[in-house]
Length: 120
Length: 415
Image (cartoon, rainbow over all chains, first blue to last red):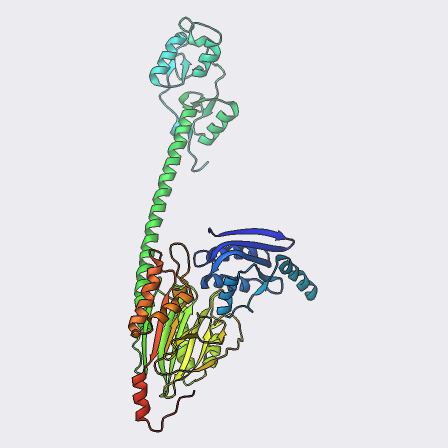
């Protein structure tokens, strides 16, 4: 499956649909797109990984990168649609609690607003 | 305008002229012979009386059904001549032509004398030549840049090749002689420089430290981080027997240096040479496997921790296991399990471990060699996309038994 990123907006939240494998070849593309989103002031990002075949360690690195460049006070990174196989990659690396993994897009988008109310 | 192209550089100084009484047909013939689209009518001097162009042929002769053979050209010329001064820029001439839809401009000097003629064709031809010249110049520049780039790439490639050889030498040091333990490994960098490394070293007289690390990615950054990890290990591990303490300290040291998105996964185990008790901390690598000699069952070592370099203040935990003579400990980096075949399928941890179990009766060098070959066979023509490190530690029956016999007061195995 060809690697593809599609961007959608839900208010001030950007949902990035990731398609293909997140690996050595594609991870730099994701990092560049995330850089560009953050540079344009987007700090609330949801990564939809439901169409990701597999994630290798470099792919995991790109997600850690995302986690680090997004300012948690202004927003954050949410991951949705992760398949059991890819969740296992996180488990083996003991990274499940590093990321905010959510079940649905609604929950992920909503979490930013509940975070807002907490902050204010 | 400084640097601007002047009309004088592009115009034709050899202007085709005819007297006014020449027939229009003759004038047309002269134009055809010279291959030009206009003829200037003069009284034989350099003062133009008018201009006849191929456009006039249609509008003034063909459409009016006149006979060019009997019509003097002087009667059909355009007398309202548009000219441009000598020394004007080509851009000015272009502007005049475009604004008035003129195809020819007569170039005159300050006295109104004709110096030449410039046509749209001349202008286009000049622009084409200028463009071609520019393209040629840019192509030469690009070729020169590309040559320089290739030169730089070759230098980097050569540097990386030598650095990679040096790194391989650093990693593949001779194992220390440890009674009851034999080691074997495979180490392959996917680029010249890799982010994987391993080390086996004595800690004091009674312990041996086994370390395998995989820095995310490969290439110069990963290799530099790997070197930093190795230096940290040498410094931090000295005299410490708690693996979680060493890894925790290493995490603290490395986090400020780590580029965003990079991390180090690995395993650190310390084996008590006299009891074969091993405490260990694993941090994000594919689970190391301990193959028990009596049960031929491979069990992944628990618990796990997150890799180094991700979170400040991570508390690393360590496990403890009793190794027995004949057991084999297999440590491998994810370059083995994440290798893909032509259909983009991953080799996978399970396949790697099953392969290890199937090979377990063989000698340790044969095991690691075959494990490596099988990964490469699976990859087929696909490139090896990540560094590969496989380290096998075999706890020998004979050596250990001899050692125990010779030590009447030696520590007993913890069951």
